[in-house]
Image (cartoon, rainbow, N blue to C red; front, side, top):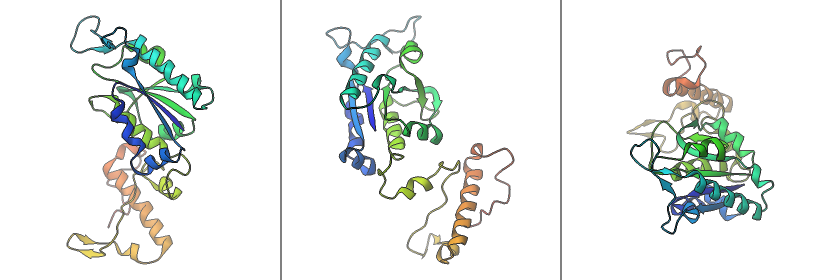
Amino acid sequence: MWFGVVTLFPELVAPIESLGVVGRGFQTKRLALDCVQLRDFAVDRHGTVDDKPYGGGAGMVLRVDVVAAAVAEAQARAGSKGVARPADLPVIALAPHGERLTQQVVNELAELPGMILLCGRYEGFDERVHDRVATRTLSIGDYVISGGELAAQVLIDAVARQVPEILGNPESAREESHLAGLLDYPHYTRPENSDWGAVPPVLLSGDHAAIERWRSEQALFRTARERPDLLSPEVSPEDDLGGSE
């Protein structure tokens, strides 16, 4: 899978190539990353990529012509890397007002050969980027960060984990939080007993059916307690969901 990232700060994105299990995916060539420096497409010799907003207001806005030129470069690089039909790759702007990034969205993106991610800065993109250049706008949460680079890393990591053979144990991806619409069940390891509590006896029983049942109940209980918005209206944290530990 190929990721193209249009950014003013490639150095903030590049570390994902060398860290953790996703980093190993880049090192083994199952994943590929190209960072396109937005300032390479500046409108003048001073490196200008933004301008004051029409109508007044604080901050600067990234220009649509600059972003469009950078996207064209990203598409060209995708083609040179053998990505089929690079002009059809999704162009995803990362912005607070975008569609919420969920596991369902991640799973959809993981089926694609690649994508181009646009990292905003300052007051964000000229709205014509969202209307005419990007094919989708995504947000990693209802808060504001300094730029889209961290959001791009989150999206790349989440999508890459669904690519076959990236995780050492494929069961890890299938059992993680949100994949079944629920949060993950609790995990325990040694010591069995400690000043911080004991491991639930069922996990020590060797009864695999009972363990699976306990884990399912705990996942449902945790979701109802911590993220009831993920459940249907018929289920509430007050229901008897087997939440005892």
